[in-house]
View 1 (cartoon, protein in one colour):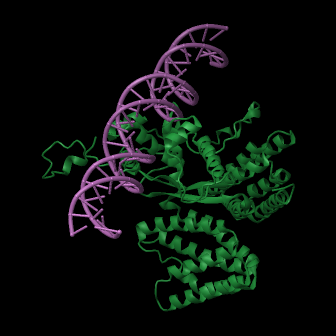
View 2: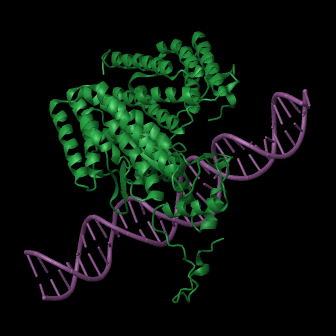
View 3: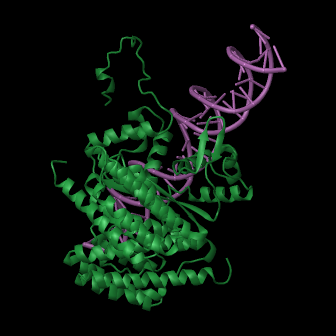
Length: 249
Length: 249
DNA sequence: AATCAAGTTAATGTCTGACATTATAATTTA
DNA sequence: TAAATTATAATGTCAGACATTAACTTGATT
């Protein structure tokens, strides 16, 4: 991330190394070769990989290298490893499927920043959902909103219902990446938030807006849906700011 | 050194139990111990960790174990490792920093979906950048755009310049999460794209729009900047669609 | 025969030591 | 001073031995 090269438009940079994100050291080739092996053997979820030492022999590398590669996969949740049971596939691995490990560094001060990246994703998600959803999905969204309101008005813990509501929208978008990204960003947010402030009841004031959002999405009115979501996000942001300026931190 | 045993006057510890450090199996204990070491030494971003072998000695474990732990951190982006330069902190490690490993599963069919989540982030990033940037950052952005155009018109490989341009915008947003997220989504996209289609020269047609984008951001005109970025994203999307409907797949 | 206990064994987990590789630091040379 | 060369210190890799553990096998008991 050096911006020192801002001025240097090196003339000799013809064959500038493409700074691909190197996985780890260079276990990438091993992982790639392994992917091919797995695909060729048509291994699926739950199937067993050969022992480390055999993989090493087959690929002409040391066992330690295979080990590090498999551990990297383990850290990504792609395989599970077990003393006697060996290494098993926990997820589908093929040359066409790439598992991108995103690591977000979240600092306590960055509650707002976290919210800032969530905001456009949520807004876009409802916009897409309004355009893409099936009729049934629209009904589900409206129903979930009703549930959420009921729980909320009963004074119970509404977080589960809220989560289900938003999941329904993400699902209606037809793009699982929205769910994956937003969900995990949210988890990170909560992890930060919970530490100093206890349970997060953030966003309570936005709940009455949710049925309106649901109706807009179900009508296929993406513009209105996006506007409502924008308002919701603004309210949450205001809450975050209030808290951070609040009692102490 | 280890002051863990300083307080423990265990009643049954008559024998000089040298095996004070109970290993729980994986490398988490090593990472934990390392975190303590780092915090106690008040190491910050960019600072150097001791060599693997010294860490191993200090923690009474083998070098391989330390290695695996550090590689895990590398995969999370917490440290960078380099032959002679050793291991350096790339990010703050403390109790207040939470490192959230996001794993996105990207399939070949989801080029469009990947683009769909990148789109709102890019647009929001330029909007925020236009609002938040310092004057100097504005100048850098314009300069990068000029560089990009120069490289492009010279018929050279413009990907590096393009990357630097967008990084400048993300940096100007003041929110590192934009850079982190978009960058990695983009890497995932490229990784998918390269496999079947060779080098990605995607987005070439959008380059002439970049100076316009840079001017808008530098002027602080977030609305215009967002519009231009929106157009860029649309063009890229159209290209993706064309390719997928193209020759074969 | 069915069930539980003990032993076997095949895999990962770990340590050690050696050597290879390489990016930085030090030195020499122009 | 600056460029080229050599040294050096760290990671990268390999190989072999041993430890640990959990699935598998076998045997004893009811």
